[in-house]
Length: 302
Image (tube, rainbow, N blue to C red; front, top):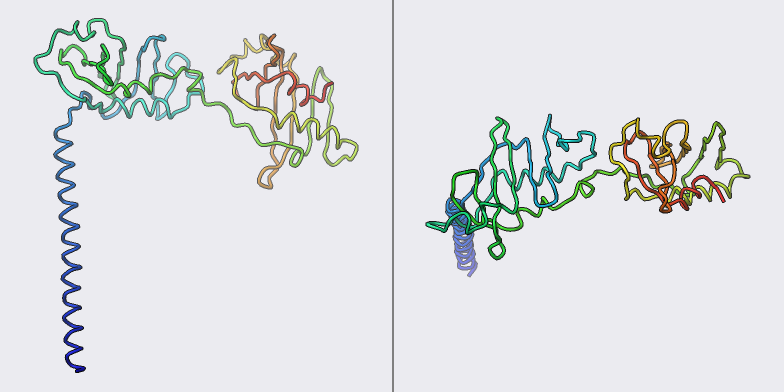
């Protein structure tokens, strides 16, 4: 009886080994088939661009010319290299257009005029690392697609309308604004206000300043950097915002973050006539708009 049981166990084990081997063989075969299918689909795809590196993107989608240039790994607004451009926007554009997939190629189609391609709706020009230029012309809409031609080759394709979604941002949308720290009465150590040659200091270690510290911390904590009046102000234009050295009010806030002592410097200028004041922070060249009420709290003004 024991011998029969042993043989049965060996047989069951052998069957298990065969089943496991069959499973892995089937898995491998399925993966191989998937790769073949993917390769077949990829071979059938039509790409109307194949650009290794894009160094310049220029386009007009009805709201004026936009151009971005990449130098030493960084993208810039071509006309204003000081503009604080968030890199994700041009990077996404380059990723979309370097190998642009067509939905289909029209064979024996009508004339370019019939597709709106003699007077394109949108134009996108791409420059590669060797200085070569590829220009895409977008014509009429075709359902969820657009008719497109490349340069003067005359071939007409359809591409998804989503290919131009990355171009529909304004410069303001693409601005990389400064990161404002988290400041409140719990971590504000000191605030020093300098205005017209006069200095006022509020110190959290001074018991008599407890109310003042709470007041200015409330103002500092309410700041949001979301509206800008100038994204790359030049020194000669600071006076127009009341932010030149002789006019501005300086606020130096010492606070703790992650158990480290840090300093925030704000420069508060004139008013915009709409309930805001012009403000700059640290070494940034962006002029922000912050409500007069918040600025009054920061300055501990009535």
